[in-house]
Image (cartoon, rainbow, N blue to C red):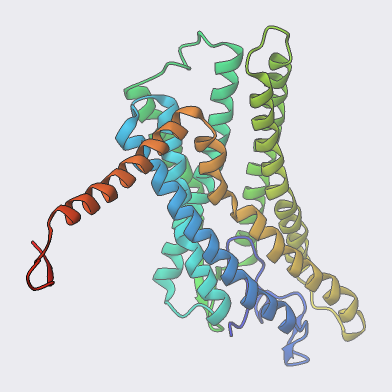
Length: 351
């Protein structure tokens, strides 16, 4: 079992160097998190494995459809393509974190740095892309004749390059300042960078929330006009997008923000106050494990929410399914035509 079920992406490190509830006077880790770790060891790998399967299937299917049927020079399609790639980057880290929960980090420091960096690139690029897609949708509804709506070609490539460059820059501390500690923990080198990682995610969530609330409220007001068409279906979609976003990310960001207070308070406590501070922290750890599952499942839901709800992509998906079905039936017909039964001997063989 891992010595600690946490990983560096959002967590504080509770060991002999940074744990505020660890004291050399007692010679042992004072806040016993055995049950918390057991909970994470059982449930986190299962849910992460399910996320990986659905995310790989959904996002790869999006890429295939875009490459086969769509114009990739379109800004809208460029956003969708980049979002699918971003979610795949994010997904790559999940099997490693599942392994980490069970066994600790035994893969070496270079792998620790690379996995965290790739994970963070996917995390931040996905957030930035959702912001850009929301702003683009807002412009498309409020000012459909804008040049931004019909942008194609080199502009789409340039926007994509900027998004990925910004994501790599923001994620770079995850590569530079992570290390493997003696107790098999892949973590930030010190608590200051752990705080930086937490508040980066909080800031991204706040910016996303403000933009989502503003843009979608304006879109809803526009759709509620008597002259608006297909407004019921669009309103349901917008409501679903906002509910999934806030239900998924609000608890997670609230929990990691609360966890940051334990990093600020880095003074040891005496045995008299230990129970008072230890029990709330363990409850916070349970909340972290559960809220993280909801938040990270967003990589599985993005293809459904942002792609397959559209009529165009539904039709593309039907074409792919029909072509697969047609191929199977043609193979069966070919096999049946090539199967010859000997009347005299009763033996059957295939050419």
